[in-house]
Image (cartoon, rainbow, N blue to C red):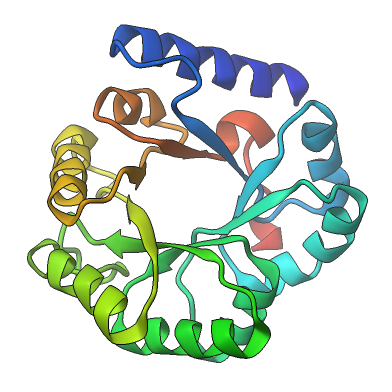
Length: 222
């Protein structure tokens, strides 16, 4: 896995150069969902420290021990957050990238105050307006960011999106970049294994890459 990690980092650096961006301006989030601690350790030992998980419950089964062994780990929640899992998410994750409705904003604010721990936050935007997908509609994104800031005193750090898998991701990345500018947000989490180099060209500040590092996931594990 260290070779795959090295290749992804090399591709990101090449994409940064092609886009005329400063080297190191894009953060790699290694998506470790469905992989257990034993599969993750080699990637940590190869130097990776920022990881993404889709499910709170799955992350709870492996990351507390890994974080104890590697205190400098930064863990991102990149899957939908259910309100009844908010307390656990605030306790475990350093970054929550999927804030997408008022109830979640409110419960994160309440739990952050209660726990004295405030994860960094991104608003997820449903750039393709897909009914089955989480995220705020693009035309509501700015109002939602302002509501998080003004009504719940949440410091939103950036925006995140997952383009429709069967469409050219470029226009979706361009839309997220435009919305970020309008909202005064510099951080953009966009791009996955199939399109992270394109995302870099469109201004991504972080990319979420799983299978290109870990290989094909065992579907039996979730």
